Amino acid sequence: MNAPEKLAFPSLRERVSPEEWQVRQDLAACYRLVADFGWSDLVFTHITARVPGTEDQFLINPYGLMFNEITASSLVRIDQQGTKLDDSPYPVNPAGFTIHSAVHAVRHDALCVLHTHTANGVAVSAQKGGVLPLSQQSIFVLSSLGYHDYEGVALNEEEKPRLVQDLGRNSFLMLRNHGLLTVGKTVADAFLNMYTFENACNIQVRAQAGGGELIHIPQQIIDGAMAQSKAATKSLGGMLAWPGLLRRLDKVDPSWRD
Image 1 (cartoon, rainbow, N blue to C red):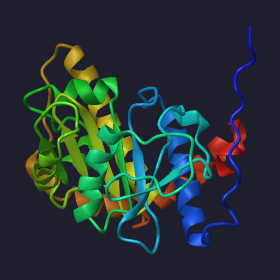
Image 2: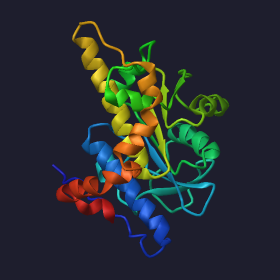
Image 3: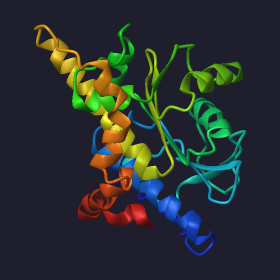
Image 4: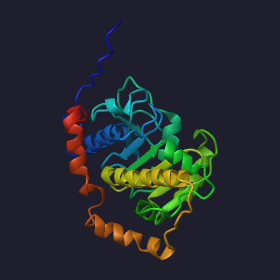
């Protein structure tokens, strides 16, 4: 049996700005964390981040690498049309970037866009009622949530205006029959939002499976969730948990930093 291929990418640390290198490391860490938490779908979902100092350049995963193989130097720099701007042997998934490019084009406050196809997320996205106010996690999602109806595999450019209209200024978007999407002003924020979104869906599916009558959280509590979230994270958002998450990765494999 042949030995597995050992992936090696030339370091870009000295070839990009310190700001871009930081975003590359954070985005690579996010890919590794998504794999670590069991949210990846082989190679078929995406996390993107805007290159600092640009309006139309983004970083995305090389299509074909598993999420636990992503490194800072392996990420591919692309333009708004998904055209590669770096020399990479790997292609970019056009369906993946259709969604992300639509969001990045209008949400200049969102450095990072994270999209998953988890079993719990897709299960709730297939429910007519969507996210229900059943848990503390759900109130944070419901305070900033949009829904987008399924239109098939995301290859149609004409879908973009409808998608961004459904997202609006929200931080969470449920793609009906498809999965979950979050945005954040940092990679850490987008990850924390997805952690909350995924947990809300997981809890909902388990609560429904119990078969008993469910207790819904009152709307007035949901209305105050945004202020409560800021208080709980000391207004640091995802950055409160991010250093600990990076330590978690480093204990297993620090190669994401390369």
